[in-house]
Length: 231
Image 1 (tube, rainbow, N blue to C red):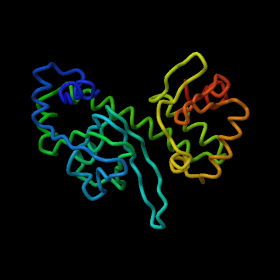
Image 2 (image 1 turned 45 degrees about the horizontal axis):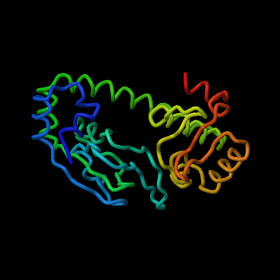
Image 3 (image 1 turned 90 degrees about the vertical axis):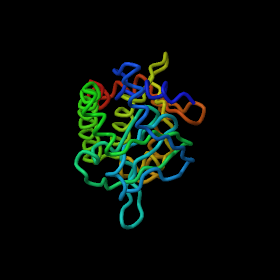
Image 4 (image 1 turned 30 degrees about the vertical axis):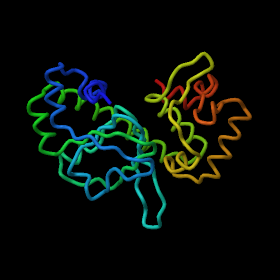
């Protein structure tokens, strides 16, 4: 595995020269995780920063009664843990691999060394954190909606901004989500998600491709909520 090339594809480091990137490589430890293995426990979230080189992970929060709420889904190129390194507070969530994943780990000390020596990394970090803040606002909108179908529709539209790929038939969501994943992300039951998706399938607003990916039709994207979110 060419770690140098993988780091080059990370948005946070994409502006660095080869020489600058080699300096980053020396501060990175590589670790592999199996599917469903916990990558980061809540109590350790203020100690290291993680960068996904390959695979996918989910950030989840578990309530006292054992119910899971998925806060985010990350894939290759994404990173997490930097906020807790900055304010030294733990994050009330854990990170679990949803596929076999390879992750780069940066300690708090090395994280600050990189920030102090690489101004371009600081610039990109600020832009990425602003983007995440706007995404958090959208998630708050989802949770504030009373209609379950609107919640799922807005979730798909929000995910399409990062994971969407235009095709001749509509917009493909290049992210695998189970009905339970969707339910955990918007705060409704899995049975409700199934009923909503079944109705959309019948109405041809969506299609499931290869039993994995969701194709959103032009009618789905032209809905009132769709136009609002995609603006």
